[in-house]
Length: 159
Image (cartoon, rainbow, N blue to C red; front, top):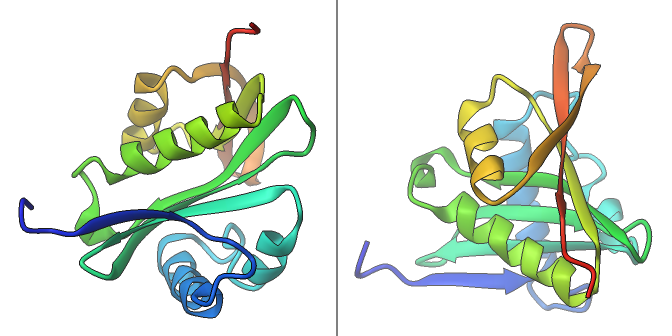
């Protein structure tokens, strides 16, 4: 991995690479997430919303993962997606992406970040807990009638 070129980028609406990046993310969405959980059909529209943002990670020019967030108010943010391609997992890239999103939210003076995660997704649960997220509650049938989710949150000190 020492010879790898790793680049973390925030996608901006006026970026010349917008279409290319969104197309690649849609491909990843379709591959990783079940159809009813995927934003593949509406990704472009979701990203164009004024309160949303996306940070992606490229390794040697290959889009390896991304994190999408939204700030519905001036006090809170929601991590709506975090995905890393299978061949890039277990190498710390999810950690890098999530930390970048957390820092971006901190820079906006957000007080709380929340997210939802399937309790059976052990690596994701471990990552969120490692970075300080706490379980708020279990949301029954969040993903589907037989799949629940934990709502988790990370609070920042109010200075």
